[in-house]
Amino acid sequence: MNRIDATLAALKEQGKTALIPYITAGDPHPDMTVSLMHSLVEQGADMLELGVPFSDPMADGPVIQKAVERALAYHVSMKDVFRYVTEFRKTDAKTPIILMGYLNPIEAMGVETFAKHAKEAGVDGVLTVDMPPEETNGYLSALQDETLNRIFLVSPTTPDGRLKAVNDMGSGFVYYVSLKGVTGSKALDASDVAQHVGHLKQKTAMPVAIGFGIRDGDTAYQMAKLGDAIIVGSALVSLVEQNADQQLSVIEQVLSDKMREFKQAINKADSE
Image (tube, rainbow, N blue to C red; front, side):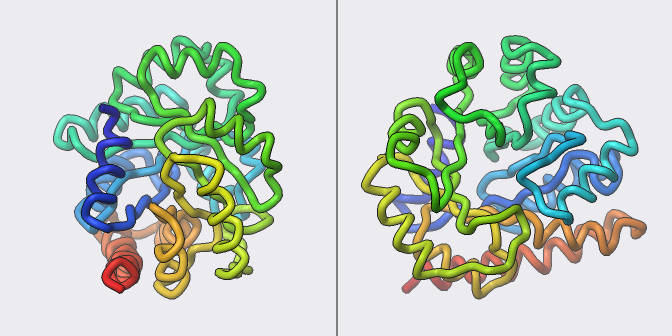
């Protein structure tokens, strides 16, 4: 069983919501990525979402755009991302890893080559932001051949026809974008999310992970009441930015404090 599927099934059995933090590979420095991945797991991450640097991150707000720019200043490539995952897997064979990125670097490598190297490195799932399910063709089969989960984004404006395609072609979980806008947006309406997630769960049997706009314990608590997992990105990446010129230990500490806030909020929601 894929690590993502196994982790979500185990957490569901325990009545727990998964916490999935996002960081950009190579940010703030390539030498720090693997250590930060391990630190996030130590602070309660159930899975890791690793952003693949790309020069035109259209779905990302300014915080993650700047993180990508910092990583690209060190020329961090897809091959480097695979290297980080391989290094991480030397001491952590359990935590699922999801790559989040855009189609261009994958096509540049070749979809079959990408899928093969991703699997060999220890990747479990791929979320390609600008790849809708209707357009997957050979890309989808390449991921399937390597038993990699195919994760798709859905939003408040996604029509039912696409929800069906996501359910038919996706695997692992559905990533629900909790608001209209880019990553890091602030206007999160819990009642609106509840309505849309309720509708989504009628259309898919897959777990639903909620992301975009979860920035503190309060929003994490609200979303943990609604989803099977919550994904936090900009709130963590902004802390990396604020401490980008600090030593690794400082960055690990500020991220740990924020992770603790998220984890406590999720545990509170799960216990009620």
